[in-house]
Image 1 (cartoon, helix red, strand yellow):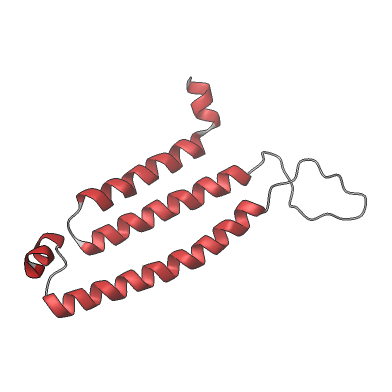
Image 2 (tube, rainbow, N blue to C red):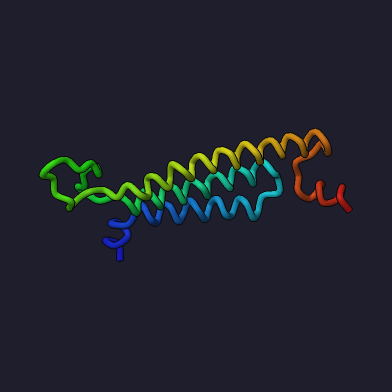
Length: 119
């Protein structure tokens, strides 16, 4: 069991990071802390996707004349991660701008106090 964990430590680390981010989103009552938890979850997913495409001893996926197609790293997860990073940055900017707007309008970032204001 320990050898399997040692071989797949990157998947376990991604799972632990995702759980930390999920716990932060669920349990924290501050909007900024929820945004930070969401960023941790996104980072865990990016780490997981890059880990899927990794091949030990693999080479770059650049095919030259006479090159063999075996032992190349899969470039698709890397492209997905780059696209995901762009989307994550835009979501982060939008959520932080909404948090600033909430603070300016209501004077607080606590979810509980914002619920009281709306009732």
